[in-house]
Amino acid sequence: MVEIKTDAAVDAMRVAGQVVGKALEAVRAAAAPGMRLRDLDEVARTVLREAGADSPFLGYRPSFAPTPFPAVLCVSVNDAIVHGIPDGTRLRDGDLVSIDCGALVDGWAGDAALSFTVGTARPEDQRLMDTTRRALEAGIAAAVVGARIGDISHAIGSIGRAAGYGIPEDFGGHGIGRQMHEDPGVPNDGRPRRGMLLRHGLVLAIEPMFLAGGKNDYYAAGDGWTLRTTDGSRAAHFEHTVAVTDEGPRVLTTA
Image (cartoon, rainbow, N blue to C red; front, side):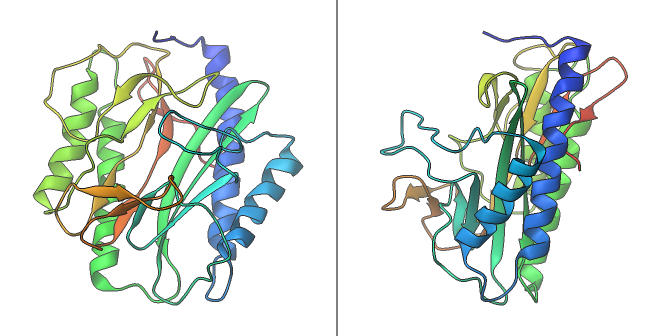
């Protein structure tokens, strides 16, 4: 069931979104060669704790997962697309890192992600990240009253396909509110003017993820969570929680 939020609920989600934005900024600032992925998770835990927020990631167990998720942050490096578990792996110069974080404040959720390079970026990685970010911006711009879910999907997918990137078909954006994942789904590729009509008060997590190798294929790593590209190419992931309003899209997950 799709829940349309009141204006007061959207304002409450903005509070959770600010915590997410601050956590992502803190993690990005802390990321450096030699730092362990689990240390990045601790940075995010500190931000959530100081804000009095809970994590919708910690202990989360969807149907595909063999175990509950053990962290508050997903950290996906290089060929990892999403859902990477932060462990003792140390960052190296040139790593492409995608971080995904959520927060729960007073029962409302926020969810966002970004990608960046540790140290010196390879030109092809910078292009991948820039294109994925631009696709997110296009998806947000399409999230207007009177449009349809397919307009968001088409805006994202057309940018990724034109750049020659792969798009994993089974993972994309979603509704969000009291739960981190709600209806409707928001695919990262699709046909315009198809799908649910967008109304004032609909809140969506829009999250393009592109694969540099141009193939859509991926596989689940041995931990049952991390999704990796089958060809070993790198991936990028950007996400914001966005409210559809009569005044235009409202991004809720900036610091």
